[in-house]
Image (cartoon, rainbow, N blue to C red; front, side, top):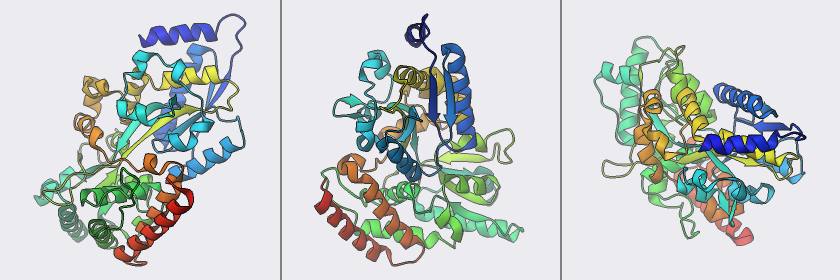
Length: 420
């Protein structure tokens, strides 16, 4: 079906008299991600007769958001296709092309319904799902076996196990070894990490479904205080400046027992050139208690066409190519990017490359969503205030209790001024 649809679109776009278009795609920052985008661009260009160029995006999602916001607000047509975070459709909707009439009904039904709903704003489909994400726990399987310990079930157990392995490895001469690494810099990645800590502890997700501000509560304070205790004990002091790749590189160099990261890291850790190939396991992030719940932040990226694009038809066709089942399967196998098409979680080749995808596919519907829909256009400010409060707690600038009280005051003020 997909080949027929794309073939029809290709025929129309490359018919006699049709002019070849030049399309620019803003795609990722990590080396493998950019490489996969360039490979897809070359394949689509060869088949379509158009030209596709890939431009790497800023590494931090909040930096990327500000760059896109500036570009769109100025009517800049230099980027045709934007790679947007799952939390941005509502905020950017007015600057994006409505894809509704361009995507076959059968294709719409292939993707996770929740993501399609997230990408639909006021009846307009402003982005197509490309890959989804949820936070997961990576661990050194060989080291857990070496020290005779199990994969931790709770965050407290993780800290204990991390310390045990850390002390053992340092005693054998690796002074740079740490128990646990995560994303602790003051940016959107810290919002995701902290939501997982708080969600697992039963502390909510900053703002409730009804828009009520719920973050200042004892369970949330306990979760943040526990995380602050990791810094300098089982996590390196510089973890408060870590983004995804800092954590991944530290782990892949053999200097950490556990890591919180996204699925993309699996392909890099399992690559033929990785010293950790065959030594890494994947598990759900820990619970707050044995009787609690796992809480993984829902992430993921979409592809949207700028309404300022001078070549919208060709850009839309490239989006459909990139988000197709065939391309998502290729990216899942080569880069462990989690598909937005449920059927691919049962594909033998995808599962052979990513054994943990079977469990991930079942866990995604229960992942913790950030409150972007509840706070609408104010989410960026809400998240900034949240990660500031969390980061201050991690670096010892105020207690978890005082920082959450400060946060709630600022959120109440923001809501009174801007509303949501």
